[in-house]
Each structure stands twice: as structure tokens, then as C-alpha cells.
Length: 120
Length: 248
Image (cartoon, chains in turn cyan, orange):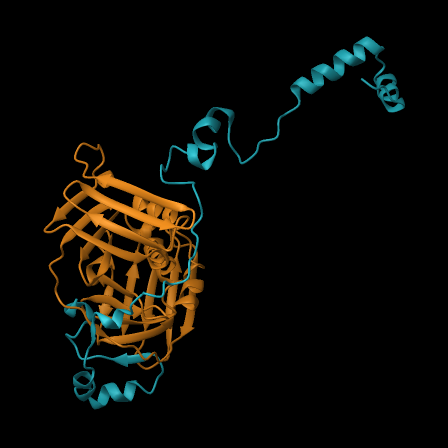
């Protein structure tokens, strides 16, 4: 251990001899609080603060992040499978009252009883 | 007037988290039976369908059917202002071009309200016919998310092969290939960890992992996902949102 002037000053300031001072800093070091990382207590560290792969809470956690590939060239559009619904019926059924409300962007009225999930 | 209060506001936050990267804007169609959305992604490859029953809200009031056109990113930003334990009330008058969101803490000591401008969105409604699928697989949603994520390391697409033995997910690419086989499990303790297969006919279909990984953003909504497969028919992933409804 390298001794510095400051070590001596600290020892003299405490009024301790060399051996007493070494005992003092050893004891003080032993009692110094350890920094907690991630807020885990020592008892729970093994169960909840391990690596992602060792987490017991979710066995699917950890692993690789998603690699976002571009869409493959063979990818078809959803319109190739499902037909567009004919909306002309819905428009023709619109009452004058509902066309008045459609002056306000985003808010439009539908005929009661027509819900998209009915066709699902 | 439309007014609907969702006591468990975190569900609406999760719904928005699930769709915000896929659907840029959507019409939220409100009727006496509930709230529904049908929207395509910007490249018109996938279709998102949300159905929320009026019974999942308390109170729920819809005097006249209305459509609320909203940009998903903006709606998501507003909902992020709500705490997870807040209740969320959505309110819209027919005579205005805004929608209001009211967030209330459980003890009602903190009440926030946000108003958002509505948009006129041209949306194409697609008619989805009733289908009988070749295979219907129920599995833990987290398991499916993990499979889709892992296989993106290998290639851009996944081949899903479902037989009576189980369901196999395979990908291949420049670095090699990967296969994940899930067998039907009847002996697991938790029902949500179970893999079950209803098989009419063995089926083998290939899908772009890009879109499957977008769909798996709905994983926090449901412990289980139901996957319906049929030749020449789009894959359906169904995430049930408790008694509230579902997201497909």
C-alpha cells in the first residue's frame, strides 16, 4: 500500500498511531454501504435481477431484438383476398340530418344498426 | 352524444400501443353496441379489426352512430398522458369536430381532460366472409411473439406447418435455417400456457415476419393468441381483450 502525506495527515488528525489507523480504515471500509444497482436487494438479486435469459418472471423474455426486414417482393395486398364493400348503399341511406353533421371533419353519423363488425 | 368510460384505461393504452406502428389513422365507429375499427396498414397488406363491446364500458351512451376519425399517433400521444390505473372516458358531441378524453385517478383526486381534433379519413371497408379454417391454433401470445422475434434473425419470412403432431415454424436465410416445433400440450398447469390445435386439414403457409412482428405488439392485451390458417386466405391472429372485445 502506497502511503501519502494525506494518509498521514488523516491519521494524525484522528490522533491514531499507524497500526491503529490501518485497523480504523479496514473497519470503516468493511462497514461502508455498498451501492445498490437496479434497486435489487441481495436476497432477490438471483431471482429478479439476473440476465434477461435467467429471468424467472417471463420465460419468453430476453433473446434477440426484432430484425425489421423489408416486405418480401411476393407479399400480396389484403385487397387481393377481400372485396371492398359497396359504400354507395350507405351513402344513399344518409339522412339530411347526417349530411349536416358531416360538415364537421371527422364526425359523421351512420345509420343505426350498421356496424362493421356485423360483417366480420 | 357519445360517451364511454373504460374503468381499466390501461386496456385502451395497450390497444393503441398494439396498432400505432401499423395503422396511421383510423375511423372509430361508435354505435349502441360498442366501438369498432377496421383499418389497413399504409401498404395495404394487413387489416386490423378492433371490436369493443358496449358492455365493457360503464357508462356507455351512444345516442346516434358516429364515426370518429383519428390519427393513431396523436391518439397514442394523448393516451400516454393517462396513468395505467386511470379510468378513461371518451366523449364526443355530434356538433363538434373534437373528441374529449378524460382521465381520472382511482381516488378521483386527479382529473385530466384532453381534446383532440378529428379528421376526415377516407377508409375502404373490406367485406370479410365467414371462413372455415384448416387449422385453428391457440397458444401463449408471448410464445408466439418470441418465435416471430427469434426467426427474424434467420430470414424475412416464416413457414407455418400445422399437422396433428403440432405446429412448426421455420425460417431460412443466408446464415442458415431455424425450426421451432410446438406440440399440443394437455399436461401444462396453466391453461394460458397450453398449445391447442383444431385441425381439419394439414396446412403449410408462408408469411412475412415483418407483419407478424407488428401484430405481436398486441401481446400485452392477452395471454393467449388464436391463429387461424387456411390455404389462400390471410392468416388471422385474434387477441381477446377480456370481456371487452378483441383485436384481430
